[in-house]
Image 1: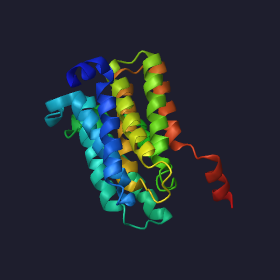
Image 2: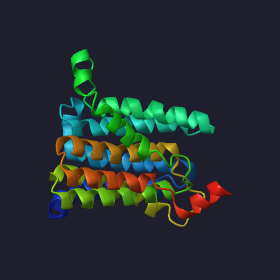
Image 3: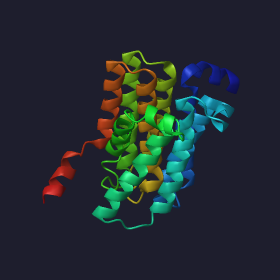
Image 4: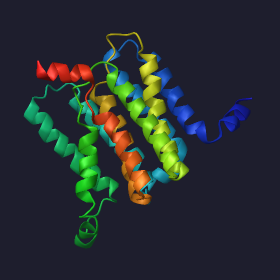
Length: 246
């Protein structure tokens, strides 16, 4: 019966797994509301591993680098979560996070020839990661999960309408599903906090998918869909704008 249910899910199996793992992990982590973001990481990695399987051990194509990017972002997020950051430290860290993420998603070039080959693309990719982190530490509570769920859904629908390969649509759906599982799991709980441990890997998942899709399928419609997904992460909400002017 379980195998039949999995077969019925078809291409939505990986997003469904991401949602289920994130939701259950959120419920199990209820005694530690500040660690709700860890559930998002577990769900997202479960979905990505289901997509790529053992291929992620030796990534050769750009999309296969995504699980490792998410894992690295989660570890960095866990380390940063207890830290109090001022505006300057946040800005410096934003650059410090965007640059290595860009290098990794551009194929981790090492030789001068490879570095020159990606030199023209690097600023746009770094800007994409910086854009995705524009609201980092400004969103509170469970808002980063809801924002990531919306961004992942917009990216998945946009890539599908743009005619991008189904792989990228599925990756974006995995991010949306994992974020939705956490958001629903903490719904109604004012003490829940996604924190850096969840915000950074979710942003990395969305941006990494957008970058990989744009590099592999650089049509105007795919690039527009990628930008639209990133803007959902980047744009401030109306109440945030009022707070910043006050």
